[in-house]
Length: 528
View 1: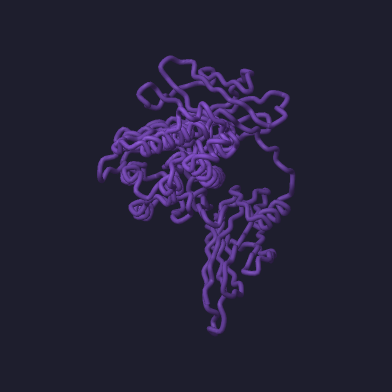
View 2: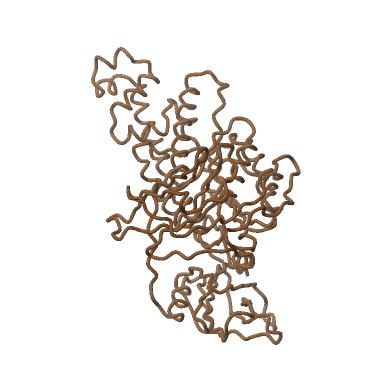
């Protein structure tokens, strides 16, 4: 397992990946001359479109049409029975298989991310309630995880929905919204424009908030700020709101990318469903979204975002300005979703129909390999445009992508050493790690018992390397080879490590005789 951020420990571990491998469908491997993209193709009613061939797609990279050299239809779950009514469940099996293969497609990985730091505590309750029905509608063979931008709730991907449902029922927003607390109202988008030096934005907010329309035309901005307390308060509130908005947005984008990267090793369709209150990023800064789009393209993750539209029940001027600011934030969230090859849904009332469309979209994925131009762009970024040469259909695809990173040649031993040093996972060999704190036989001290299991069909002998980062933050490592069980079903290693109270990061890497490497890690808290 891997913890990519202390405050947000979403783990896509070896257990999931080993199970996914059992149901593995046809795949192709990306190379340094082949750009891999996942695209979703839907008809006008939002239903999956099957039976496409490479010649049905036109892919343009940086303005140049490039041929589609490889293409696989990853999955098409029959979601016709996956209604989102109360108590709904899915009993259907995949109706279509991966192209050119008679096996079932890989199970999907669906992660629900509640962007709770952008949602006010009393908002988005309908989104959360509908999400519970959405969880019941996801086919039982698919893996589901839950996380939040605050880090307060995380459930690692599992086939068991009970814990996810339990945590979802308690979900609420944690946004400490300065717009609701200030003496004067300044939107988060306008605040950043004002703080960056836009006199036009400041004048417009002063005009709305202070009613100085006639005076604004006859006096300089410096005079207005000096003479009118309301105008001065707006400028000060803009600085506060801008600092809040920038910190919130930076946190949002960083955590979106962190979750995307954690999902990357999964082999099948990967859907990140973000429930958000919007993204407070001015349109002039929207290029910040490119790094999210590139991460999603590299990981093969499709992003869907849902947000509640502000209810127009309060007719006051302050609420009207708040609602307008929220809509601008939702527009930016929509830009992010579309740039990343996903969908954005503004929800009024029940959200069930939008969750249903997400299920459909995740069941219409083609993985395509596109030949790269001979020369890569200086910035390493490709502008992507994908079209389907059929009437009445639409395609969801990233607008930006980065070329594959060339592999670094190294020996299995060097790769194991790298995994132990960095804690990065590797899934070429399925590895199961179990760790628990136990008392020694004489009861005088605490030890960590570590058990490693590798499937018995792995080419042997299987060499191993372990690493332990203890409370002193120092890495200690060594070699431990695995022993094949008498029945031949597994390679196993069982050993004890002395431990004091604190947090331990346990890492283990293995290499088969064929040179494949697997690596996992696990956190463990040892109490007195």
